[in-house]
Image (cartoon, rainbow, N blue to C red; front, side, top):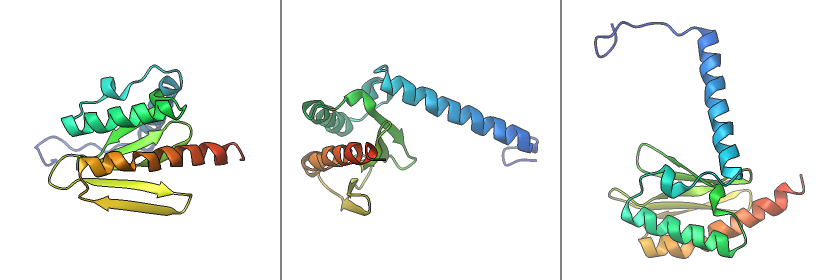
Length: 145
């Protein structure tokens, strides 16, 4: 018996590969919707007040930089941290603006990752240009591949 009294059933290898395939298809479909401008982080996710302020400012700065805010893709982790991607280009970083301790991660170039531990909302907003710079860096370098 399982933890909650349900009968344990063994998942077969072919079922696992089918589930992986379904997950990958869903991921590809979501990415395609981002590329087509059909996705919006504000419609796709429940954001708290600080997250809404942050992602609104990020979207505005992305737009002002000549980039497409509909390419922003968020994935929420169990601790409230958001993984942030710019679809088809790069993983941008992480941000947590909920819970006891805020957190932000950003990249510099291809090898350096920096972290802000317990930053204020304003410090996170002030760091958005680093995310924009990294997206542009990824776009320049992906076109060389």
